[in-house]
Image 1: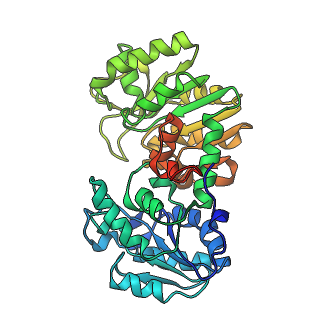
Image 2: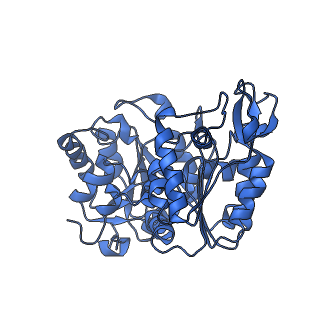
Length: 400
């Protein structure tokens, strides 16, 4: 069991550090998708209502351990204030003079955001001692710690792991909800249990496929990763994404699926184009007719129908990864089709974060039609895979 906010006791007047995931996409200083900010609201609202003095810490982008204007959390502050219905203070550093002054100035029920954690080399340092040293500086700003950035719980970073060892700690509402929802998929899924995997890189999904070959009833493979499976079957894949180094692994997976009675469903047709661009002419071909000079950009219409039929009777569905280049209208039909089938499914449907969650929003689906949309792509995959996540294990009730 994870430690909850209740375990922290009376919080009025206490300084509470909240590790949120406010890593929102920006166009300049304009937020293009505020989903992660909204996901942080239940925990922040609860702490505000309890009279805590809340200091929110987060990363944004991938700065290299030093400040960069384009990765500042400043644009997030205004939107967070609008959603909370109160002014939110901003510190121009993370543990320096500004942060100390801003946190010291908080009154009960007020909120501040501290500048990007990753402007400090200690946050993501490889050396344990360096991370611990930075975590100690963070801990000096709080009386308690709430971990609510599910998108980072699979990373051993100062604000995710070491900080939880230094202050009374608990999981926030988002992290609790994520773990509970994903464990419904991993621990005892209702059957038929169907997994839909897509995305570009097959390497990211190998561990999940390996783990699910003993759990799932059906695994549907789309997206760029499908071409490595096609190649492993001896088919032409043209200029499509291909990971030659994984062909033997994939062949072993196909054999194991067969011997385990797991139905491994691959595309039967694909949408190809002569180049990777939004206005490239799209052609549908069967997988055994792939032109050598074109690349696969999306699953074809017959595959979309096939996948829909394999999802229709599922009691549990986990989907991670788009079926094609959904950012281009001509190649978004496969991803749209999977999202649509999931949105109408009777079973328990989980969208595993990352690009799939972004696709659901970008393509205009009502998020409430899915049982759960994860905020963490990598974290949700690792949890499904059965890995121990540092930011979760440290919050277990029996953790030191």
